[in-house]
Image (cartoon, rainbow, N blue to C red; front, side, top):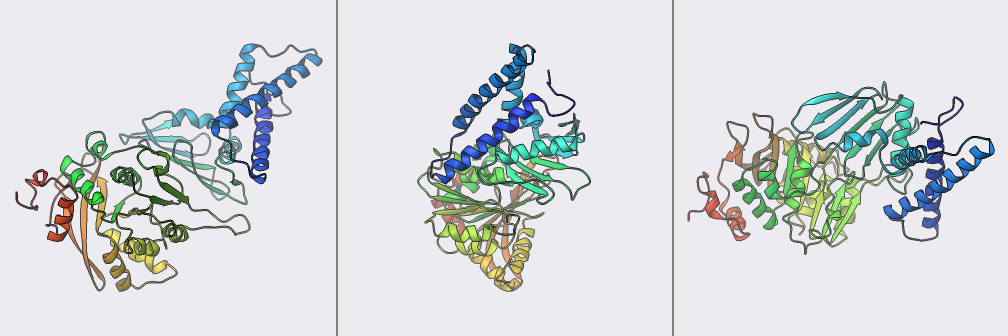
Length: 443
């Protein structure tokens, strides 16, 4: 039963709102008292106790009015509704539980589309009875995203948060024709180089060995590619090669890499996340500033989840000032296009670097550009790798050591510089694997 009256919300909705307010108030009180943040299990246990009290009071009120108390079935239904609303994602949870789904696109409560991992798309059932109810769902999710207030209303019409499973949620209202919600899922939170080869088919064994040696040789690598092509997944795989004894600082717009969550593979990680300005326009902390902060934290490597703007300058400075082995991703349609994007971002930065100055900076900082695309069968694949050699005025000089083959997947191209090749071999690259390539040290 829904227990909704014509004059107001259902009992479950009333309990949810009351308990959510109590949990928020309790969290703030603990914070002000200097007490540690409650764990998820502690918050859930407290919510269960509060819900039991609410149900007892509700039953008492019903009995006083001459109505029967809730039976076990009704009580269980309310408990599931409330706990799912408080700790799950309501009607979105069913979609998130489907491991085949990669992206969820909602253009209003009743216009729901999903894209599966195989590239097919499907329209799904409504996720809410109305756009107003969908806004309420988003607000409930935002309220649980952390201690900081995350509003979603006309005064703050967009919301960008990371869900508990690592998916990225972006919502918009007021400025759109209807409430919009997009969820980009990361199906592989933990991924290895072996996974790239055998589970995902992103590259072959030789290319995986090449990239592994690049990471172990502490080469600075930028991963380029279009939207939803797997740049973050590749970054995770490359990071899996980093020895556990190294200290990492990760910098992201929204937590997605999740390296700090794997304390076995990466026990010494400081994860930093940018922050948007509040309603008064204050308190913003951009990625560029976080890169500068990260350099003060004695990192062995700095990993920037995605270069989006002025952080390109401190990022390249970090790469060229002793933090070799750093990683980052960037949106670009080709491997050569990565250089164009870097130059555009540098020109828009506070330093306003010229093209020539940017190219000198990039050439001294970046060792390899790895580009992801789609092969001719529609599968994600590495299609190009460039070795950065030098800068020549308005041009970056690079060797495309792997280039797109007939099927859109990378094949050996121009030879590596001898110095670079020797570095990779010294880092463990098996020369025997390179037999059949057009370059490689003879054995």
